[in-house]
Amino acid sequence: MDIIGIGYLGFETPELDAWREYGPQVMGFAKGRNPDSDPDSLYFKIDDRRHRFAFHPGAVDRLSYIGWEALGRLAFEDALKRFTAAGVEFVRGDAELCEKRGVRELVCFRDPVGYRHELFYAQKWTPRSFIPGRPHGGFLANERGAGHIVLITPEYGPELEHFLVNVMGFSWYGAGAGKGRTGFFRSKLNHHTSHDIAYGHSPGRMGVQHVGVFVNSIRDVGETYDIVRTRELPMMMTLGQHTQDPHLSFYHFTPSGFAFETIAEIEPWQGDPFELNPERLSLWGHEMVGPVLGLSVKTPAEVLDAQYLGGKA
Image (cartoon, rainbow, N blue to C red; front, top):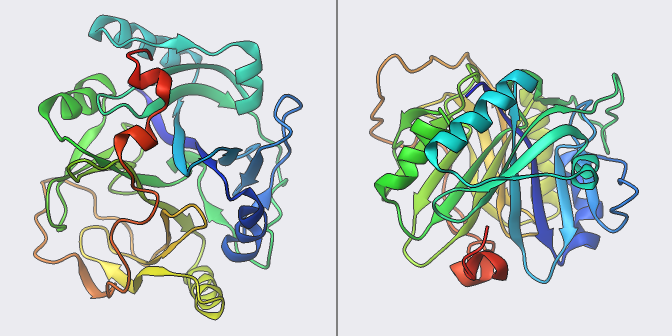
């Protein structure tokens, strides 16, 4: 599939008021325009797209959907043929849902774990419309997507990797240097970073472990780091440089209990001509000062909606 990367992410949360301040004042996001049919949600921009992150009212913090961007209409139609051939059930989004997401067309489907995904093309955008919520140098998105996400799965079986590699067309990057079973995958058209999505195995648990966003400069990482420390927000890992994809980053927890990894590129990603097997997670820093799994990781019954648990997509 000709997929660029993650176009947008949607979450449910009871912490909308906290996000209204946190998004702009800590992360530097811009508040996006609400669709007319969705006045109660909160939308954030990190570039000139209509939005990249959406937070919807909900009783618990959980991931609602991952929106994958197809290169265009022809790539989108080819993907639907691939879904059909692979027996993947999908539902076409109606006009109202497409307007909420700001896209021409989309379909909804589930991965073998139960997480909801959407595939779309042609998200609306307005040139020079991104104005950060605080002084900030901006985010790297566009041709690489909005960032990456790491999910927790209660079971990690061969059907998950089959779905990601053979159906979605993602490249397998490797298992990384973390403990336990983790798989990193990259969309076909993303040649800028090692992974768009990863699944970590934790029996009986599901949820978002962290979301990674790329900023334009090391200064943007440092200033965000200072704000997090000044506000005494809970952190997962301190400032450091990874081994497998040599970027500068740190991790802290959001109002929804998952972590944001704020990342700056300090040298070009080396690509993956062979599978790396790093002996340690980071070259320096990244001291673990908080839990690996935040409060967003719950039981499957808390994370999956009741309709899906009842056997329907």
